[in-house]
Length: 260
Image 1 (cartoon, one colour):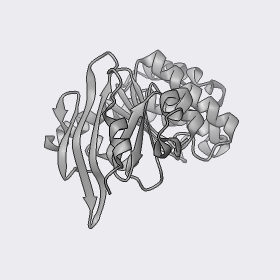
Image 2 (cartoon, helix red, strand yellow):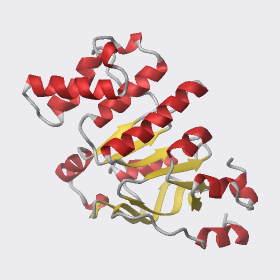
Image 3 (cartoon, one colour):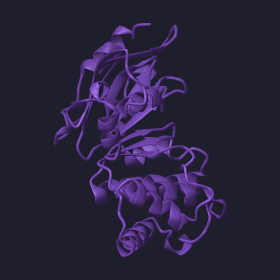
Image 4 (cartoon, one colour):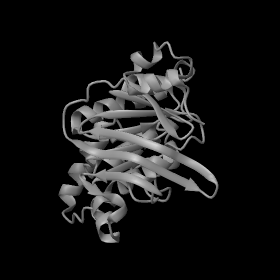
């Protein structure tokens, strides 16, 4: 279903592009699963050092977009380049190399339950970055855990951590390999409002400290307000509006306002 004319007018009223190079470029992206058209026409440029929040109702295709970004899914049509390279044209070796430059933070934080927090942090350093110097590994692990306030929990198991602590640990493990891009899929889901706010503020602090570029998928309005440089609203397989959090929240368009 085509957006109403009032919405189209809203869409074409673009904000000035933020500074910095474009690290993720998406144009005319389409993806279907059987008869279900999930992505109808996705267009988005994400600039270096920018946090872009994608808001949308469940099942609207938000997570499908980021799976295309890392080559987990292949789009049916359209362009998708990361660091200037077409993702769909990459072979397995090139995709593997790309993924070392991209970090993920999933809903469940994705820690290994059988490993201590220290071992969880060491794993990407030894397996992904191939670091063998134990002193270097220890320094990086302790520095990163200290940065997210978990140094005292370094030898605890994930089962002994609260939900908020697991989220912080997941963020630390994502950042420890120093990715240039981070993709967050519902980073505050399942957390109480106070812990959710802490995680959102931590995401913002880490962006500023490590100069990461991020796409943040969330239903959490407080998370969007705190973390977003720019918000994109997804509806029925398309991005129908973009702007700052306040610009969109104060829009006179009923559909856009319904997301807030």
